[in-house]
Amino acid sequence: MKYVDLSQHLHELRAERSGRVVGGAMRMAEVWQSVLDSPKTPITEIRYYKAALPTPLDGLFARLGKVDGTGEIAAVYVDSELPPHWGEFVAVKEMMHCFTPGKHYTGTPSDASNLVEALCKTSGRYGASVAADNSAILAAAEVILPHYTVERYLKSGMDVAAIAAAQDLHPEVAEMICRFDMLQSRKNGEI
Image 1 (tube, helix red, strand yellow):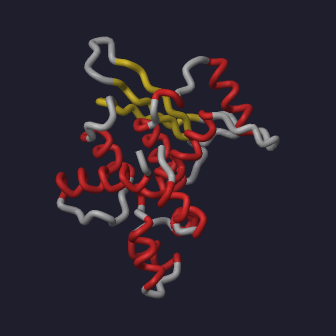
Image 2: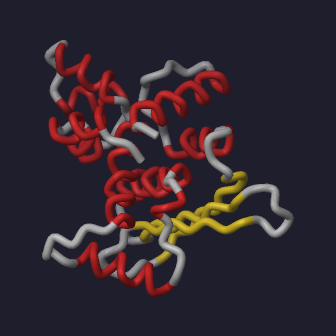
């Protein structure tokens, strides 16, 4: 699914539920509820945990099938040492894995170990699980504040600090999601 389509889908679900405008910044709780409302994922429950995670992990996602077969449970772990604004971003990023196709799942302890090793290496190794994690970062940025909203603000002459203030985003998060390279990658990528 393209990032822009996923973002539009989640924004429309939020609008149906709350009446908030499509394209305005989404908060973690709004993304959470939209994931649960979405027919495009088997996730029917999300459990959120803050924990001291090993370096280099800021977050972790796991999915488990429900015993009664009525869907899946998502477990979202966020490093307890992160500042609140980055903790919220990481939680949204981890929720994007609810939409990750099964071929990108990391299903065994060995696979998870290989993923951590690949994330730490600078040798250029880039497996499907690492790609899925990078995709989740781009998807989260697009869901939090869609590229077309950012571009509209930039065209009107607003700088990133003004965009952050207008959308009630932390300036550091706005700086990251409003970068030109992030905007271009979000428009064309898919999870």
